[in-house]
Length: 151
Image (cartoon, rainbow, N blue to C red; front, side, top):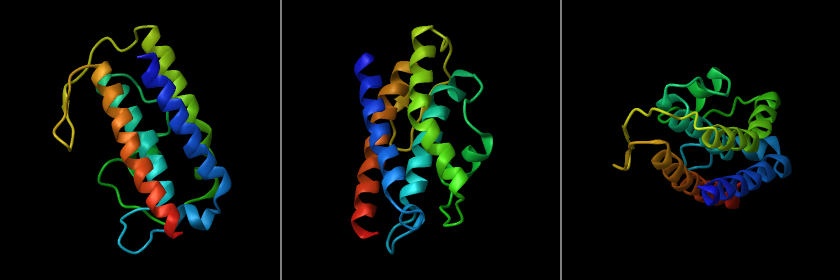
């Protein structure tokens, strides 16, 4: 699983770069023919990782619960995002992966509630969740790169 964590950290550093280099207006813009913004996708990546790992393992989330409500699957993107919210997400992108990795290595994820993803992939344990999360992150990175070309 070391490669999964290495890839996740690499991806998260790319996302941090977007948050640091792009203007607030660019981050929250929802282009025509898109349902969400660059920031929504980045926050959604953070939230989804927490839900797939901690929540489905019956453990408390390591991020603000308000963030979960705003960026969970099926939520609607908004342009009403504070700079503090952007900073919170930026500050938790890499550290959240490091925390999952530390907890994984300490065998904290002992139980797991099976989950069928929206693309019909069954997750039955933490290893499945971590592997699917890498796929999920990649999908959203692709969307972010598409939006970036427009904004």
